[in-house]
Image 1: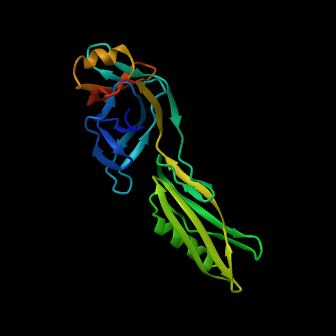
Image 2: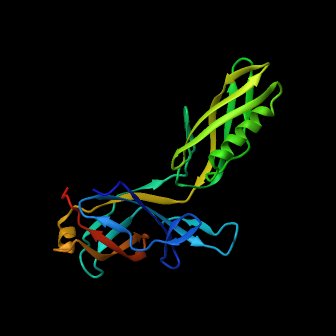
Image 3: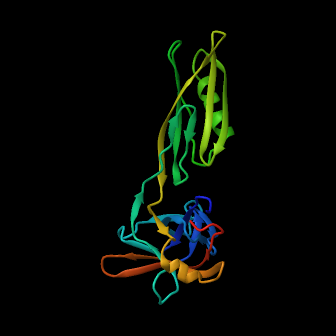
Length: 247
């Protein structure tokens, strides 16, 4: 089986071009799908602007009546996905000692609050963004604690453990005593309007498409029922591969 992957498609509503990420203009070229897998997809509709500050803006799909399909144009789809759920704006969360900054966030900010019971401490970091690094987070915590009366020599050990995941421990000194500090997060992150669903590459159509080949080039299409008709937003080449072990 292939590693669990999510195919993320930021589709330019005007040109039908698929990009890899928010404000990332790297085009998606021939995504690979494996026979027997249930492939996860996220689809976003965007408009490319002429603004350097905001190169992409989110466009709402007319409805959740979306179909993603793989197959030969003019023929019966080898696989299709028609069940979708909306993607909400990403929210940063804290579960000690892990901070999670969601990958689907596209903008906005979050702050960390650092507290202690006795002696009392209540500090809030400057705004952090989805792109803030472990060093940025550590520096923000240290600055927030050291800025409070009676507190000094703050330290924060921040280690990135995954995509958008950080483990954090923070300490501060008051009257020569070092205290372990409590952390919480307040999120004001934003996200693009999109939908997530799946493509089951398990039907007879996939077997027929592959035939005796180990891989074939096919077409990935994303279409939406706008309420007054159908609109095709994307049609790009894709690759369908057979697996060594048949699931």
